[in-house]
Image (cartoon, rainbow, N blue to C red; front, side, top):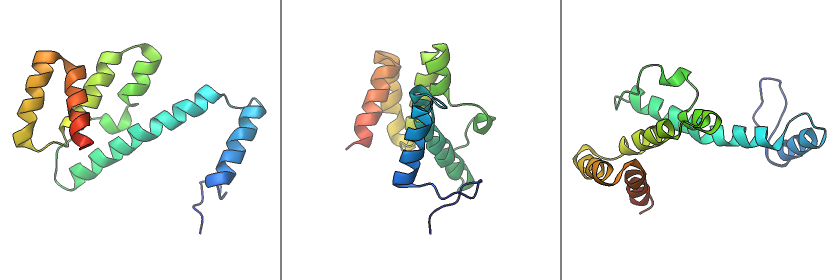
Length: 126
């Protein structure tokens, strides 16, 4: 059975794509707005995973994190890329076992946050 939205409509796959295309064509929504919604999905998933980790007894996310807009959205809109990088680094480093975290902190101190993020992402892809 297809999932229901709060409107009671069955929107999924091709039907959802058709509706979005029609809204863009009619000028009721812009492509940039759709792109923002798509970009928010990854941040929302990350917040949900952090909350699940907290509920399972893992790391505690910073207070109020669930109620704020994701750092990447602010960075895109306001140009605060440093905050977005910090959020990305924080999200990645929490997934690394404690004994391994020190090596990424050394990379961050020595080569900067972008290098540490790249190292963490390459670890994740292995």
